[in-house]
Structure formats: structure tokens, C-alpha cells
Amino acid sequence: MQIDWITVAAQIANFLVLVWLLQRFLYQPITQAMTRREKEIEDRLAEAKDARQAAEEEAETLRARQAELDSEKDQILEDAKQEAQSLRERLEADLREDMESRRETWRSHLEEERESFAKTLRRRAGQQVIAITGHMVQEYARSDLTTEIASGFVARLEDMEEEKREKLADAVARSDDAARIESSVALKPGARGRITRALHKALNTDIDVHYEQNEDLVMGVRLIIGEQTLEWSAARYLKRLEGVLDEVIDSAGPAQRPATDISGK
Image (cartoon, rainbow, N blue to C red; front, side, top):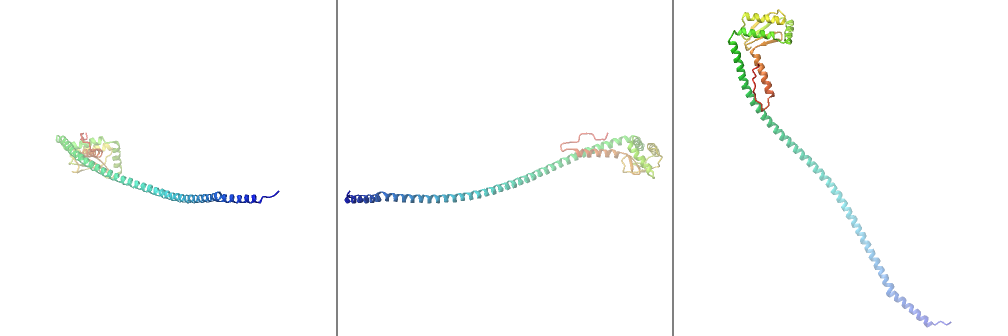
């Protein structure tokens, strides 16, 4: 078999031309395209990396800002709480001051009302005292004054409470001194005798009795044995009246007014 070298040479030439053509129009563009694609991918990866890094930096910045805002929020809340507490304390202080001012004003008005009421009551009391004194003077003007005083004191001895009788009897037993009788006017012998007999009977004793005049008594008689006393006088009624007045004044409100007879009957 003979080799056709021309044909072989032509085929080799055709192959070389085909390789050049493939190199020139196919392989080289593909390689360049792949190179460009790789470059584009690398660029995109770089951009993505840069974007990710930027995003992470932005996220870190946002987290730092969020932490700062949280801290500021806590501080703002604390400041608001303190301000609210301070405001409440100021309002409470103002309210207490206002209430105290109102209370003082009310007390002042109340004291004025009570003083006005007390003045009215004292005027009424004066009228009652005058009425009582006039009544007693009228009664005593119709008879002997010493007889009436003695009769009043004898009645006082006879109506004496048992507790008071026991105290006077005990004072007689413990005292070595005579009983002392003080009277607003000098008692006549007959009046003294009545009082002495009534005293001995009431206390079941024969104690000596000394009589003295005491002008401080108001139409009455006072018995003194040791530290014990027994009195019958107009002053007794006046003291009763004074006690009633004190009770009324202490318990009276600003709207009350005296309206009852306090003569002690």
C-alpha cells in the first residue's frame, strides 16, 4: 500500500488550519469570556464582601446606638420618676400648707364664735345670778337673817350624805381641836344652840364648837373639823352655777346658744 504524501500533507495542513481557526475563533474567545466571567465573579464577591463588612459595621453601629438609646431611656425614665416624685412631694407640701392654713382659719373663726358665745353666756349668767340673789334677799328680808341661816345649815346637817357624815365623824375622832363654825353674820345664841345640837346629833358626838364670823361667806355657814368642811351658803349655789356654766362653755359648739334656766333649782 502506498502512502499518498500529498494527501497526508494536505490533511496535516487542514488540521493545522482547523486548530488555528479553533484557537482563533473558538478557544480564545471562550478563554477570554471565562477570564472575564471569573473577573466579574471575583469583583462581585469582593463587592459582596465589602457590602457584608459594611452591613456588619452598620449593624454594630445600630447595636451601639440601641444600647445608647436603652441607657438614655433608663436615664429618662429615672429622671421622669424623680421629677414625678418631686412634684408629688411639692403638691403634698402645698396641700398640707393649704390645709393647715384652712385649719388655722377655722380655729380662729371657732375661737371667735366660742368667745362670742361665752360673752353671751356670761351676760345670761349675770342675769341669773342677779335673779338668784334677788330671790334669796327677798326670802331673807321677810324674816330674821340669822334664824334663816341657822335653819338652812341645820337642814344641811340633817340631809347630809352618809359618806360625808362618816368623813366628819372620822375627823372628830382624829382631831383634838374643837369644831369651828364660820358664818357670814354674827349668830344669836339661840341660833348657835340649834346648830350645836344638830351637829352633836348628826355626828353622835359632844365635841366643843367655836363660832366665828367670816364676811367672805355669802349668807351662809361653814363647819370645819380638821381637814373636813361642810357648807351651806349662797356661795354654794353660785359655785354650782359656775360649774354649770363651765360645762356649757366646754361642750358648746359655735352654733349653740344658751336657752335654759340655770338657777340651780
